[in-house]
Image (cartoon, rainbow, N blue to C red; front, side):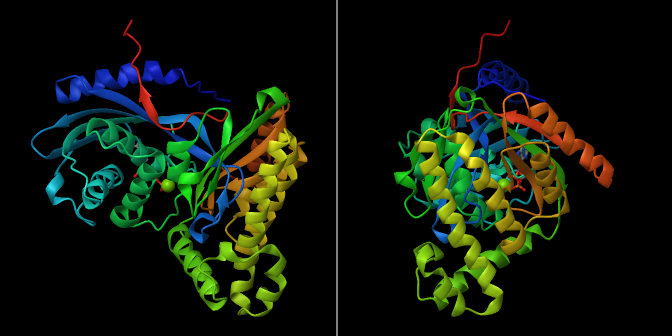
Length: 398
Ligand code: ADP
Ligand code: MG
């Protein structure tokens, strides 16, 4: 099991600043950190103007950055191909960058598009967020740039505005039609709390205390280490299906369909849209129920909500896969209070809520089940609700 403490950021920041000096020959103006996230409940609801309840992870993407006055943007990542990508800010346009650098360059583009006076910079990234595991390494990468540019260029934007800019980068520059949950989680989460997000009004997000330690609980993230290729096109198709259903029902978004009206609405829809609508409406209700249980101080009571949410993703939204279903089943069998896949689907990670002391056994049971089924061993992390994107002070180099 790996555990990353937030204070690790300080020593990692010193290393990132050092590497920055080696690459660019000068000290950075600062180092910023933006976390990955797991969503407790509220999956595929954000693009339906609905609710979600993510936490930020202790795993972060660090960005050492220094402004430039010549309009050039240089990007390097410890997880990249070793090369420095160099671009002109004025020439940034969708399609102009096809590598990983599209995510951070897209944020600079999105700021400029929105009329902010932003210029160039030298950027070096170093991340502990696993990539492509459904833990939002892409949002961490984008949001690190958003918070760094906000400070370096004196933009004075709110967290929700920074998250919108990062989402705009992913939608308009990278070309992924994601909702706003990942970026809101990375920017606006706070340590010890889950973020109650209403995707229609992200600026009005609320912090809901989520005291795992105090309640004798642990949250496991089980990275199945599989991604099924159908993910990309399927995500867009699901989103289109939801928008079509809302239009047929005469609603601005599926969020506007109250749970009490669900049976009537389902009977009016073409058969293929029925499970999509049922998932979104019941999932929004699960978020609200989860928030109410957390507010009563009963985090263990989230368990059944997580498991119900997984069934809905598996049977209605149909975005689970054999590996995520197996991880959920094995975790529950080993005594987890609840478990579900998290993130976009077709692989990625599963979360399991367990009583403290049982995390080893649950992790081992999932690994054993994967071995028996012939899957690669999963990677298991124990996580705590961590802080959102922020500036970090590099610890003095010893
Ligand atoms: P997720 O957000 O779930 O991790 P995505 O497919 O949305 O998965 O984003 C993963 C992509 O983001 C990677 O393939 C890579 O292009 C980019 N990426 C994320 N973190 C880094 C990093 N530290 N360095 C370089 N590229 C990164
Ligand atoms: Mg992503």
